[in-house]
Length: 148
Image (cartoon, rainbow, N blue to C red; front, side):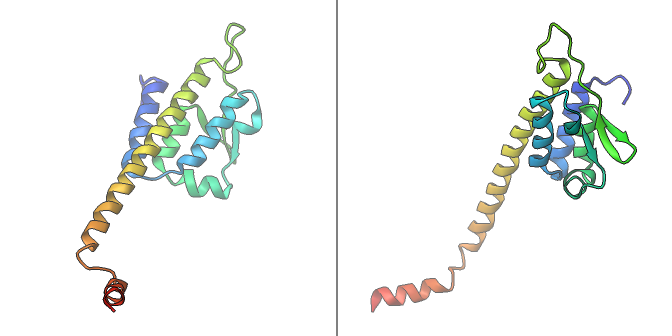
């Protein structure tokens, strides 16, 4: 998407994650948190594409991959890698534009996780309400025991 800012791509990726319902949010949060905690540590910015956790929770989710690309990750051989965040002498090690974008992504992921949880609870509540018409099989036994 030519002409889109990284923030625009981040918002689009979050929308995609929300709509598809895929992506391992906890894994994405861990990846991003590690980078924010030590942005110059290369091991936090390179992930093997052969990683089972990455394959299960990220690689098969278009929204999760769009999120990582928006944050600056790209395929580099057998890895998914992010260039070292640009940090100027004025900025602290955790205050450059990339780290700010990473923190925004963490906030957005936390919001998405809350929305998914609320939707799950609502769906559970609807399913429970539909099944309350038929009492559980043990309820009649309890009623008999109370009257005995």
